[in-house]
Length: 446
Image (cartoon, rainbow, N blue to C red; front, side):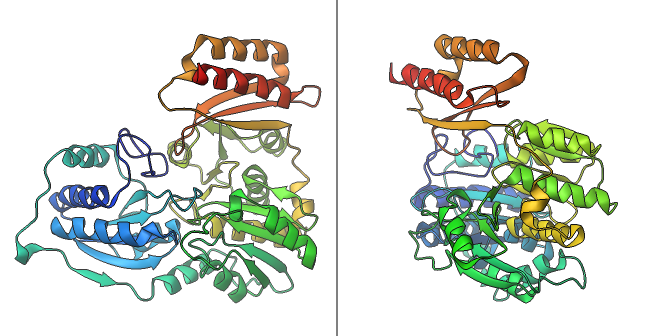
């Protein structure tokens, strides 16, 4: 989300100058509480995913907020978008999620939502950062915050998700495999799809604190593909650790990514008169999405990578639909933030209306060959600005001409340089991407 410690998805394990430790979580809770209390905050809702460190960081964060005089409501493990929703429905002043999204269990982070379910303002972020640099104190005993637990939080969110599916419609007759990544959707997604009538098979629904995202979920689809093919399911749906990302698998085992999900939803919305404006993708969006939407006369725009930038552009344009090829899908007519379950339900709405299988619905969009290589770097170098890397990029772009494009960027959550090359079938995009990746690696090593 911002400069020192707010990443695009919230605080991350070792991003910026602040590692996520119990001491830091305590101080962050106090700093945030001070800023919020000064603005009249009465209560903050705290949720988390299923990683083992969440319980430790939750207690520390809770203590810091209480010390600043702010009341706390605890939900237990819930998807990130659930906390954004509950912050609104319970009329809390803010929401906090302890999660590292799709990262391994040993990472963790902290995300903030405002009372309208959106990310914090720049002014609030700067104020919290400034407060972090001040000594920690504590309000008088009489003014300490209080803690309560919201016992029906999961049920409320399940009903909210179901309400975004077409009224009176049913998923009866569909055989769906769900992969919950041993994460925050493990007890939510099965209830949503089962109560809407689907026959479901669930994997990745037994979290133990250390298996979240471990070769499962939206970032590791092999297990889902295998299960769909083994039982002959109509499709598979995979969520990431905190439930704000979704990927799908059709009955043939083919992966349906965020770009194709956007295309299917946009096609349905246009056909039913629901489309307001166009679709926002990111710089990483496949050119095939842009071309497919153009054929439907649906405007398309690209934002910087990160759900925050997608939301900003959607709001600027007054559009409702956007997302990333990684599976962060934003349907602002339904929710203020990305929601994997709601996005999947929108795809299922589209399939019902179009009377098509997932495989048929995705066939209207042809993706161009695109290769993404993640290059780990030390964090002390600046390979993107190095003349060797710039020269290799220029050489690759000259070789491709107008048949392809190159994109290099730093990850917002890990010490990685992401090298993306996209082009038509006449180009060796993998070889071209590897040339640039090798240059980045050589510069970092040297």
